Image (tube, rainbow, N blue to C red; front, side, top):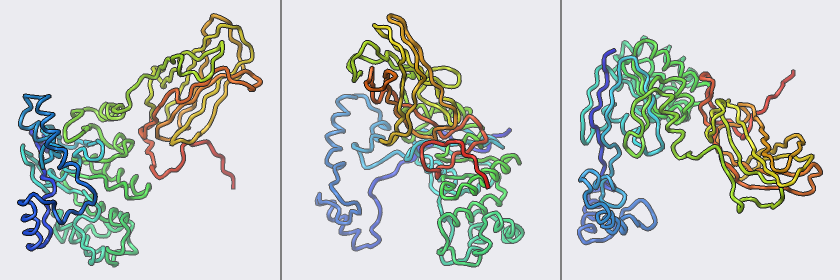
Length: 445
């Protein structure tokens, strides 16, 4: 397959705060205040601007600590060192024909800036981009729409902006309207549409352009769950026809389900080079979620002193390897290693799971016996699919059968994460689902 997008050393720099007031008089007044060293009289952000006050001192500190900082590195220290910020820094990769590439990263990583450069909305400061084929982009809600025109009129307007001829739009009009689900409102001004309706209409136009390259930013988050699935199906159809798709989303399950390869951007740079999407997502998920699934406890962590102590706690994934990162649908095994200086009978282990400060549930083991001097291993398995994506904490403890006292108690003993990427590739997480657990329910009627 031939290369249709070649990105070579692309960087994008912005100057902070340099936005016109919209009035020549105000622009002159701003300039006059600046040359006299006074604060901008038209600042739109309230509060003290500590950045200006701190940057020179911070820059000097950085220079002393790093005597040989390069010019590029120095300018990229934008928060304190200059009025310039690098939204992208030295991005290089290529995309082949028919490839479905996912671009992931946190907010502010540079994903949208990269797509705007590819869509020729803005130009790179450094580097070169070569594109082969017609591009259709859906970057922001309402891009290319006129609020006072009807949905039908905006289909023709947006289609023309994307490069479609009037005859081509007319031929596909019924199909576009049906896909968007806005049949009843197609002759209503767009200003009366909800944001979700605007997204549906915009995506329908872009998807029916039949471009060689389709670029979709995080706009599907506005649509409902059914429409998200519909859009993913349409993008899969576009990809199956040999066209190229670039997809940006925070819904990692959707990215994994749709894309073959991926790139992880962080702070304007490439944190993980182009690779198989599963590897890229795994690297992204583990960033900031480091830690061992096996935790040994010091004497100070035990809130209760008794002959029996929980020495080690281990969290195990479906492959029985220690981890704190679990995919949705993956069983979670909680293994306890206990030691006791005295033989005890009728003992039980318990652990509570908390999230966002709330206790979700508590589990207790059957009663068992412990022999003095021997290590006792007790393991619990939580079935996959019980916990919805999120971060959870474990409080653990041990007590006798009568439960009138505690033998051991360790709060916040461990933290684990459940990802919105599932073991089942066909599963897509609906972020609108509320709650923390998902239990089997039998409906009758």
